[in-house]
Length: 628
Image 1: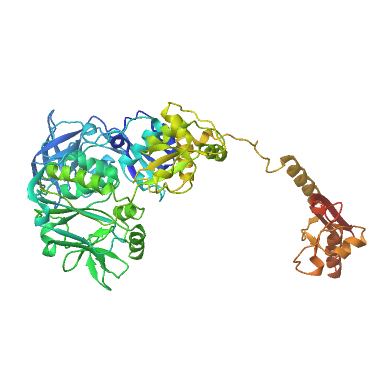
Image 2: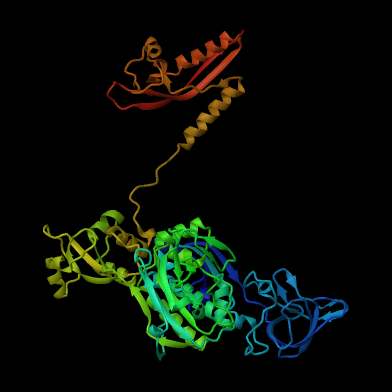
């Protein structure tokens, strides 16, 4: 997941350098896979106005443009297909360096060009090179592109673990950083203006099985004006790796990136019989989707459908029969949660990878749909001049009860190795959104009935005591209500891990000194001895660590360790000497008419004082020399 540092600072005041923020994210359990710096552009890159654009004679694509950049006029030859008179563009004047490219005056088809009209790729803000940048009509001429595109900036590529669905948006990351840095987080509070027209007169929603779709909500917008998104919205999407499409679709993508919860917009006029039904697909039911493909579904796939046919694959991708177009006037906004396993299987089976599926398959909480829907509704009314119908259709058949978990400070001390005070534990867990309920004696698992939580520490707390003694009849514990978005917190050990993470993994005490894995001196001595033997014409041999116990007895060795399941009687005991195997190797060579024999083996033997004592390995060298 890509995040922009400048966008992140909209929600939390951060003044750290790139490396410091990378360290904070990493020690918070958020892996930073890559960092991309977007440097400030030269002052000679400015917004400009194309006064005129005329085709060059003899060329099928080049145009000569007269450009006003605020401090003067210049002539630029441009080959972009979308170049036309009256548009606002980004102009790089001669002498500008853009990466490895230096802009110079040049003649193209005999026409002087004094600058370059830039695409997003040439500015380094995205890979889009389909045409030059077209700025909004109200963009002032001569403005610095750095102010328009919020440059310089830093892009962090994050790897979010599957259990942390709360970190799939900027707000979730800001909340986690708030707990790590003790800085307040700023959460936008949507303000909605609804019309008198109630939504239930125009639309109905039905979920056939809540196991597959725990919650589904829908809003209706009328008199929607589809068009270009404002530049600030485009810039945020581009830096996060998404391509702007139109204001309606861009709003749903913006809220998905901000809140971490995907949304989908349907053209209301394409919804048959004004019904939205969430149901399993029929066998071989087909749908054409926004990626330009047609998929044959089966009963294991969940679809969003109207009264006649599917209009989207739930949680994965929308259909072409209901998507937003320039002609759209009314929009149905979906905010829902789907079964994570079902979305994962559908995405994998049909090989459809989308930002929506990436989030839904990580188990999003049903409570999050309200904020995401409200935030998008506010933007629809402001950026699309839409009228919002009164009310929201909400099919939530089985609301989940709040999860309450206990944590024992003594258990944290035993597992992590140092003590945290009750006050510090409360501070850390409260900063993550957990609500402290009360103290009590230890009860394992999730608490269903709060009345069963009690101990004498509760009475002490009412008297102002903050540090509690231990009692044989009470295992001192704290109990917290888990926020709905933290679906990963299911057991006491999860809370202990959060405390260790926030306090710092680097603060875990090291009780044991580093263990020496290898004796370097012994290793060097062994190699020097082996090299000496080889230099004098000896060949090193390697035999099994097992031997025939009868051979060892002939040499006077007793109390050998015998194997329980030997490969054979000749390999049934751990060897106590190297001599028998070296002699057998020499005999093998003699039997093959080799008379000049110089062999050695340097390896371990296993000796003990008696059959019941511990087996001790020792290293010996044994050599055999025979010259004709």
